[in-house]
Length: 399
Image (cartoon, rainbow, N blue to C red; front, side, top):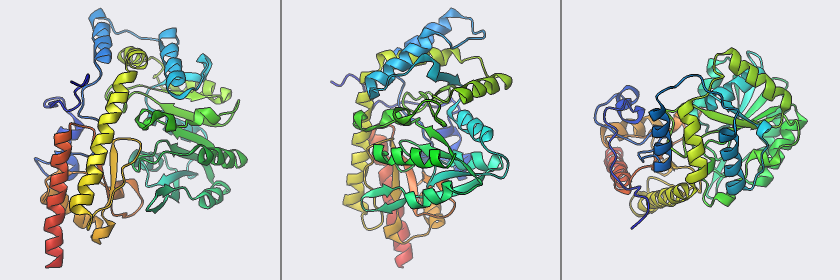
């Protein structure tokens, strides 16, 4: 019997889950099977639950500071044992969230009207972040072919040379495509950014979903002393703690590290989430085998998606299993159907909520994002709903 049961049925009823109770507001229909937002229908690891319960049992949740060994040591242990990267205490700082860190770094290194590079398709919150902060999108689209997604270095170089471009938001591994960046790609990206005074922000929130883990190369590994480079991450994705606000960032840019710390304090956000601190210690010291087992489960789910599409839907869909994340970025380009038509049919015929590709792009792109982080039977049910959708919609189109 497996040590961990990732196929356990878990109810989220009454928890005000965005994935379930927020679906109607986004997709406009009741009763949809939700496979859209990026959290997991999987219980957290028991050492994390036990650590947070123990903290709750103390009964007092006053202001808490994070500058202590129980914050630094687990993080240093995780990065050394998982990625063979040695960190110093002063390189690590707590922050309220990954998106806050990305947004504040953008705000501190650019002015209203300036441009920021995103690799598209892009995590949709980055697109919203630029719009809400009056920054312009400098789009660097991936080149997609049968081998996956490659980076357009010529386009990136041209964008970085523009006077109005002040920052680049890197996503590693990439959401939504699941691309794992090669060390050679990242070295060249860093070099171009340094040459053109473009601040490099690397969101590595999905770093623990790289299979095998040795394939992951963090931008931290390439950082030089005082490089204008910042890496931000946390436990929200890998350990399913998205509703426990926290993150941390790593930088060797000493001046900006101090400045960002002052800004966080000035915004009244300097105190740490005490439950998050308990979770970090437990996750990073007791849960390595749990995350390894979870990755095996997710890889199996993604393989099932690829196999099912090849067996039943290859005339309409194409998908190649990524070696990272739990997000299937599925193309329906072979169907020849329109983005809006497909999204409408998935809701009305399939009764399924998946994230439409245009959420992650500046235009239509004939993809949707399907979250497989749940039990295998539920993923299969989602695939059947997608199958039903394309069977019906293509009959209508052909008729």
